[in-house]
Image 1 (tube, rainbow, N blue to C red):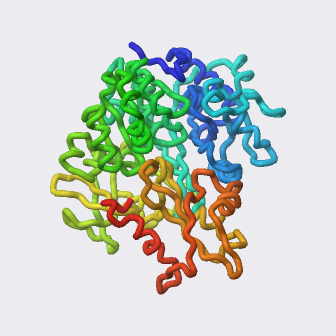
Image 2 (cartoon, helix red, strand yellow):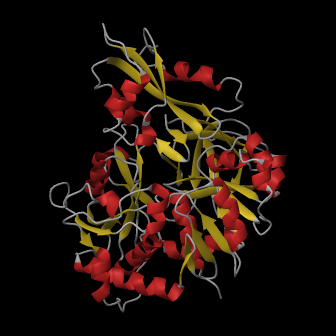
Image 3 (cartoon, helix red, strand yellow):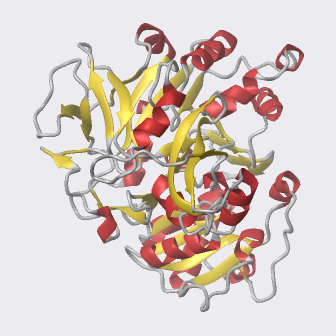
Length: 509
């Protein structure tokens, strides 16, 4: 049975992958990592990334996947909040940190692999003082114990204050083993069969591609192909070269594929591909239709949340029959639509979406900003989205109570950007929001009221923010206002700033 891993064409046999994971587990134990501790991972795509998540199973630890675009300060905040015992990463990403000075976690690095160096043009060498994980691996013996109940991913998302909060799955004798859940979803969600080949080029620090890759590994009967970085023509070439059957693909990638000339599209045989799954950003109907016309009705759209997991799934055929829907709840779950007074709403009426899915178990937030007050109703949880159910049980997302922006599949929280921008001397007041963008789903915009006697341009604002927040969060458009609109309470009326951009788009998110 084929169940090996491939990274940019380099093959890793399953038995080698598992053996290294057990040896990594010994190394983690030597650094004091035990049950319910956390291990932070700072990698671009790499097979080692997945080997380390497997190692965490053997010691009963959570793993924290860090966004390598984040600033050093943002990463340190998460390390402190998660109480990570160890930070492990590619050398070009970890070289800016000094264990003991920046944070209390031990610091281990591996030389950035050549496949990543070629794609990102970075220096692979370990900086002075970095400890090489590969050197430790040479003498490490594999653990002889069986894996513990999987703690899985300790995912981080921001709250209304912009402060990161960790989503920690509760593990007790009655809670599900996430690894067993992964095995189930490999067939129930991804429809994998023995001999299938799953491909992802999306960053594995995102919860969806990491989880889907984990499904393949847990199943034990599918091959996993990882690319270092998405490239439109490279995507088509890899499908043909490896006879890929399944892939993870988001609207941003689709837009780039659709921009390829017909002559490039025609060069590659993609007939092996029979299942593509998309998550995160809203999927524009014209993009969806164009992809179906090209590849056939092979695409599935999933709606989910880091707190809950994959919630709904809709096929291409269903999407044509139910335009705008994100599908039905996965088997065993339920959805309730609730108004602001905690009343259940009838079919067709929009309200807060509350979901119950027991596959991944319950969770708690890691800090006070992650209080669950108001997020629970009758065993169901909401993450702030608004929508309605139709008479057939299909869910439609109509709005987002949170200000969250989803750009290129990444969650961006305006409060964090506003907190940094308001410190700029030229800024008297500001509001950050998302507007429609064909390629990325949404684009970040800053509306600014300048301080008396000052002006501001986009380049100066971006330069100011460049060392304060991650690059992908920096606004790409600056709107200057003599005065920002405010509600009676004094709060900026952000919806008035946002609304003109969304008129005539047919969507609110």
